[in-house]
Image (cartoon, rainbow, N blue to C red; front, side, top):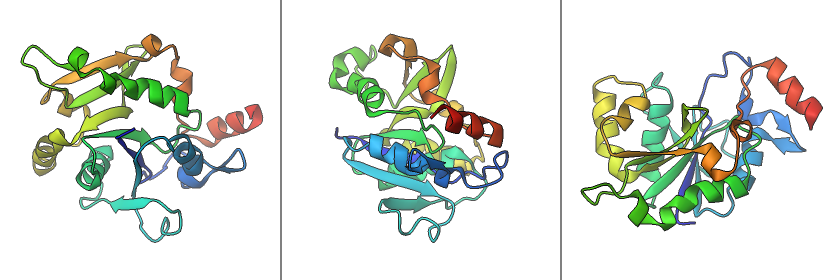
Length: 200
């Protein structure tokens, strides 16, 4: 697909206590598991907090310019580096993600007529929703949002959800794709990690 995948791997992993991206999973790691499921996309970019740690991973890297700014900074840096109109942003701690689900979600871009609003605009954000909860770290962002993200950074606004109020945003319920929230489960603690290892 002509979509860049941006994987956010720059979090502090405070609750886990160690870097979640490199946790062993299915004979590889979380970050490699997710990247392998994204092989149908045109490019993969990792947003990381330390270039040296990830230098041998084999994907393009971007690093935060503003520290302590959370996922918004990672999305901003990925979109600046992307050479496609849209980027699919994913968290690095969602090991159940698979290519069939990602392809089905992103296939909404194949029918732009359905996405356009009354003014004929394409959305700046296409946000996944599960159990009526927004999932900003499994959503599509257009490069047209870059000026808005830049403004938010300048205003010290950290929350990605505030972007949705500034640009035309479409919401897609995960149930309409034939999936449940389980597929985007993220792992935050040692207890949660232990459970998925025992189950796999």
